[in-house]
Every structure is written in C-alpha cells, then in structure tokens.
Image (cartoon, rainbow, N blue to C red; front, side):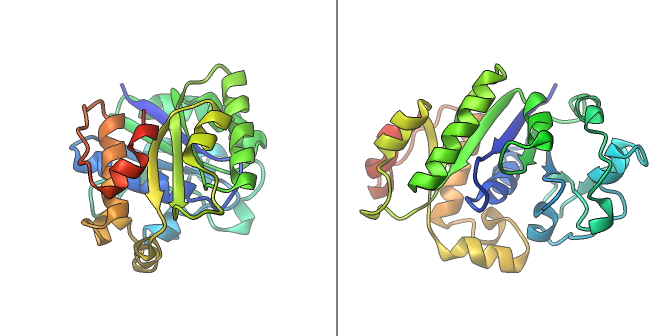
Length: 253
C-alpha cells in the first residue's frame, strides 16, 4: 500500500515542483515504485520539466470522467511513473474533485509512493489534494513572505488533521538577508528535513527537461535530495560531516 505524500507550499515559485520531481526520482533510484502526480490543474509544470508537456490522457480527463486513472499513467525514461495535468486552457473547468480520493485509492495498490505536486495557495483543488495525503512536506524559501505563507500551509494541514513530514528549504544561499534556519524551524514548529542550496544546476536541468538528480547526479543539490529521499524511505542516514552538513545538520529531523 503506497504512502501518499503531498508536496505543498503557500507561495508559488519556491521549488515545489522541482522538489516533487527530484524526490520521486530519488525514491525510484532506491528501487521504490513511484508515481508522481501533477495535481496543479491550472498551472501544471511537471510535464514541462520532464520533457512531456503534452500527453494523450491527463488528470483533467480523469477528473472529468473521460478516462480511467490507469490510462493516465506514463513512464519516464528513468522508470518513474507520472500522471500529468493538461496545459490546454480548454481543460481548466468542470473538474469533479470528488473523484480525486477514489483515483488515489486505485493507485495505492500499484506502487510504494505517490508523490503529489499540489498547486500553491489554499483553493478548492489544493484542499482536495491535501485531503488524500498520508503526510505533507512543505517547501519554502528562506525569505519572510515565503515562510509566512508556509506557516499558513502548516496551519491548514494541521487543521485538517494531517501529518507534517517536515519542511524543505530551497534556494538557500546562507546569506545575511535570509531567515536563519533556526527561525524558520521555530516559526513553522516543524522539523527541517532538508536544505537545498541555490545552484545553477537546477536551471540547467530545467533546460534539459529532466530531474537534476539525473542530469547532475554528483551535484550538491542532487546529493541533498538523495539524503531526503533516503530519510523518507525509512533509512537511517549517516550524513557526511562536510561543510554543508556542519552548517545545516542540526536542523534536520
């Protein structure tokens, strides 16, 4: 039975989709059966980032009752399975969100992890996605507006009785203008399970239409996503005590 993990954020543009893709890819490398679901129905990006912007059957078709969920599953060259939302403006209305729990239930018997990339904010489709989650990971940047919106996400999730698996801080530069990790942890009242540094490799991977863990497997960003994935999968991770770990290690759960 799959674990359903929703990747959420209160604010857009913080690296939520990048995190969903790379965690899914890392779990797949750990020999786990993974399905990444792009549940951002209005502004989907998973297909764009993985080089498959248009597919015959999308999540939109399933939620409109035009197709079965099994028909919307595609396999990335890495072996990770994906379900994409449509880029067409003609598919932006008349979703039957009540179908979402039934759809996820069908998928749970087919894999080990379902990683769902939700939309940002707190609209109806986001609430429907959060409702099917077994656990939630909140993504934020180390900036006050992003962290403030992340706090709203934490409160909404906990108000729904959901488990916060942890916080991932992305685009971290260790700059004086950034919020300290200790302050983020205290403000959100949740463990930081990963800190992803700012690195051009992420943008290069985007241009290459693939996960950064595939295009730059030895990069520090990739290494951090692998550590997070191993923690999520239940491994006891003994991290190397290099500069990055010495700097941030005490904030991991």
